[in-house]
Length: 184
Image (cartoon, rainbow, N blue to C red; front, side):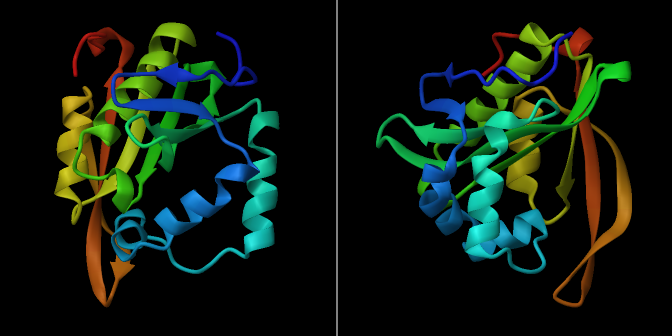
């Protein structure tokens, strides 16, 4: 297995995943300001614009993670991001996260983006395991992850305090031995 230095462009029927850059700031910032996105990602606090732009400028230089912008093929607009991170080369594993703003929701874009980046991780990079965490108040995401081949592993009980309520965090993963490339 190699590292994440190479930043591919992955093309599906509905989306294109391409390397993230600072030019994606406006679209991704708008997505990250959506109240549902804030809630579903469990985000507490703000990042300044300059810090966010600096972070985006450095994504192409990272060899231990892969940050790709999700482009809606129908509109050509950036609607979110798909990320492989927390890479553990010794165990051929990493974590996955995705964010889709309102402009890209409820049309299968997230499911396809998930399949594309996970398929790349398993088929091209040789990862054995890709895991994720999803909050219990986001069943839509859980279903999308299951469609993409992820299976629940366990629950981190009351892992997030949101609006005065404790919320469980569900751990899911997909293994290379379970991966079905043609699943949509």
